[in-house]
Length: 143
Image (cartoon, rainbow, N blue to C red; front, side, top):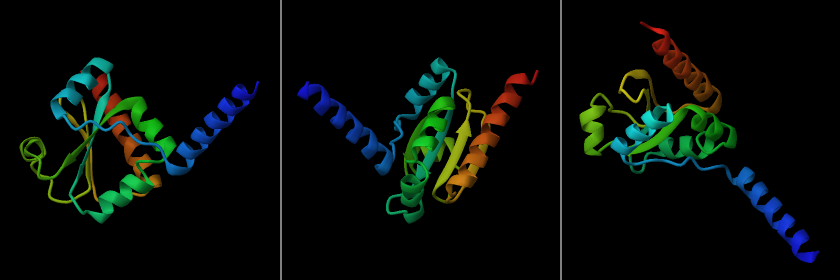
């Protein structure tokens, strides 16, 4: 009886801690693997490009991309990828990136759904995420 009560208390504490501290996106760092995963899962990709020591990148990860509702929304339709701006793949695949943070929403076929430059608060991030989802749906319907 005591073990069950202790287990329930521990579970509740962990759930509360996750909510208070924020959730963590299961970031991928291997772009090629993320493309394959997205294709297999029928999802698009969200590429978050950041720089070391970028205060706005950190602020966005801490205040927006760790919110449990944002994490859930991203995971429903996107495979999240986190890359550094000086990564060779960024220079090759996302060469126009010159400001961080920059987010690209793309299909597994590398079709651009939307790009977002700079810090976004939660409200604007949701707006852009929704617009990327709408663009993905539009591309699916296009002949």
